[in-house]
Length: 279
Image 1 (cartoon, rainbow, N blue to C red):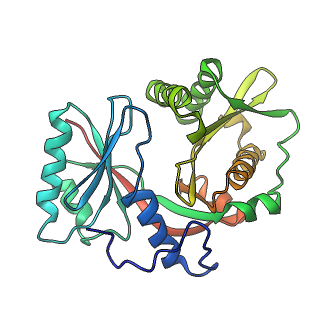
Image 2 (tube, rainbow, N blue to C red):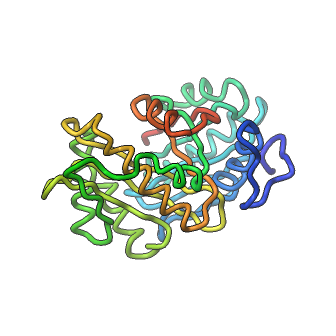
């Protein structure tokens, strides 16, 4: 089953126009969700009935990327994914988008034992447009943006992640190391340094064969927020995406980053809410 209400899918190099949000969203659903590629060397993407899911190692991302469900099939599909991932001992995430059906899918997931995390906004902008605009691309005085290419750089990223978000970075560290070792052309990770201290980090996902490069993991330590570091990392990654031929930049934006991204020219297409199931 292909995504609901299909349009004549634009090619990678087609721009739908600044106001044709439904067309761009349909392209995103098709390329980034329905035709998703595994994010890591030990992960697989499967289409099982009305669901597209990724199964990976315990430290990787496991979950449902796309579903095309109606009221009659939803509960059975949810139960099937719970059986699949719990049989592997995996916690997993069902990425529920605001335009997914049925309308009560979130409530059905709650009844099945999932816990919703804070909703984020799916936002998109043209990579070339952001790159050409400059975005005030120069980092603030005293900040140097460095590429992350080895274990030492990943350790700096992990340090920022823990200080910025207050969460454990072990899984992130292993995922980035796996990607750098096996598929370095599909990820561009960066860290912003103030002297010898890492103060912000982020990564750019570059899935092959799609129009969308993804902005992920952008975080800045509290004492450096509000100084333009996050903006500089967006500009840096926009340049890379544009040079690599990606049409759009996509980000799941938190309440903190959404106003910044809106000022930079990003458009909100939908919402996405992670529903998490723990075995």
